[in-house]
Amino acid sequence: MTELHGALIGCGFFAVNQMHGWLDIDGASIVAICDRDPERLRIVGDQFGVAKRYSDAAAMFANESLDFVDIATTVGSHRPLVEMAAAQRVPVICQKPFAPTLADAKAMVKACADAGVPLMVHENFRWQSPIQAVRAVLDRGEIGTPFFGRISFRSAYDVFSGQPYLATGKRFIIEDLGIHILDIARFLLGDVSSLTARTKRVNPAIVGEDVATMLMDHEGGATSVVDCSYATKLATEPFPETLIELDGSDGTIRLAQGYQLTVTGKSGTAVSDVSPPLLSWASRPWHNIQESVLAIQMHWVDCLATAKEPATSGADNLKTFALVEAAYAGAASRQPVRIDDLLR
Image (cartoon, rainbow, N blue to C red):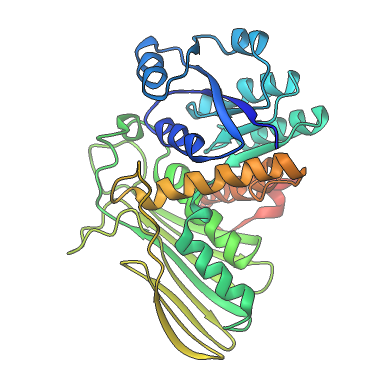
């Protein structure tokens, strides 16, 4: 396969993981980087040996022949950058949250569709190997038809030290973290018909909510609870693990702290360790997330090579993004929100 040449826009906190991931993938490389901050551009360029560096995305598109672009900027810049890439017929990976509003997200999906350009949202949590292990058990039919799920991420980890801007936004945990956990719920139990939400701000030093609980009705008949907290102090800090409980007609799945997977189903009870691998460039406890970055980027390269639609395509991510919007609307109104009403 001919090597794909990509560019990275945005050289901030998380983008370093993406650059490491690209180095590990055969068949793709980052040949140019772009950031308005010259110091971040220098640091990432020097660390990863990228000579072509731009402070302006339009100039980069004009001067480079690209097979894809990886947009790792903050959410407010996503729409203009995605539309710029679409206008240049360059396939796009876009970091989550996909857009500031659902209307922006729909416009971005349309721009890429109209241009015939592949679009994938970097919704990487579902690509964590423990989550994939849970999905594999469901696919085997081991617990029959799921009717209940709880997908939980509760922690007191200081996420603000590395990303201080998270403390300043009116929206916090649902938009930044909950979007991942909601996507996992969709990945495991299918699309959602309605959502009810409650939120709370426990930490007085931040602006947005740091606790959220969401009750969802899935189209296939299951009910799920998605709960997220950055205000939960535990004896053993679980960050950044997502814990899962699934009940089915023939058994149960439990993904517990420490990456312990217990399945009680048609074949009896089995306990296994589904810990993610520690990549050479990764560090604990982030290695779970870092491994999923490599996995989703490998999926993207495979999709470009085979002309497949990505699992987390822009069109698919509209359904996850709608859950975020429904959660905020439902928390404000304290009423259930119909998801179809948002997607029309």
